[in-house]
Image 1 (tube, rainbow, N blue to C red):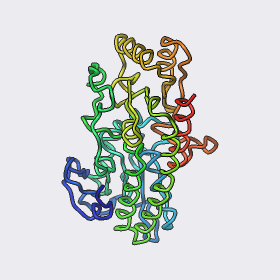
Image 2: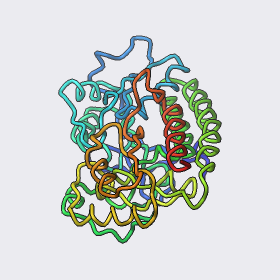
Image 3: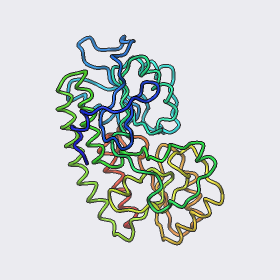
Image 4: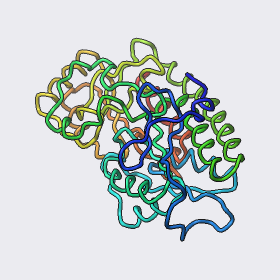
Length: 335
């Protein structure tokens, strides 16, 4: 993968509404709206420290560690337990983003309910950085179920062909930490870049522990069935196959047909899948129903997918979340 610091110094194309996105093959790593600081700086610190907002709890965790190291802080728009796919911004959330110097978003359609708010923030002068397009995103559907036909609801909640769930590849998120640190350094000083590099090293170190857990599962049992198509990056990183999903597509907002659910039950039976991995941010009712229909000892195991956990969850930081998820996957598939 190209050096994140080198990527962070290149310039990409400006998208509509002032949000800056990477052209898919451009290879750039830092794209900012071509505007100055936010027009509403009522909440900005008086000491010149940048006002930083992150959309998701995952980005809030990483950016928060960088900012804390550099003497700043981050406000996260989404609360713990929120599903990024269906979270909608309140007027207070919009004001928070509009009043920021820098807004760090995931992009690639993940934050479906924040698109207008992000556009407003960019138009009003905030620097909006969309991280996922900068991390060499992969295509949806290349993990063992590419033949699945999209449902009507999947078409309605289409992210496009690129998968936004980049945080399930820790090496990519280490690059993201460097990108975020370098971006914040442009407003807040070089300490942010140094802290971005430090946090990136911590993520890379923890990735080794996650890899050991994921690779402890015998190769013939590295088969994932998930509630929606969110674990493609994890599958690619550790040699797993995504055999099927309960909710078609990469959003939790679609609805499966009875034919799709029946087909999934047959896949689970044929592959001898022992677990369906659901999402703590959403109801597991559909996954429970599929597991019951599949029979045998199929269990539903909850992972922290779209949100970190609370203070006592063991998943209250990005690194802790990834370690806990890896432990739960390994325990379920080795059983």
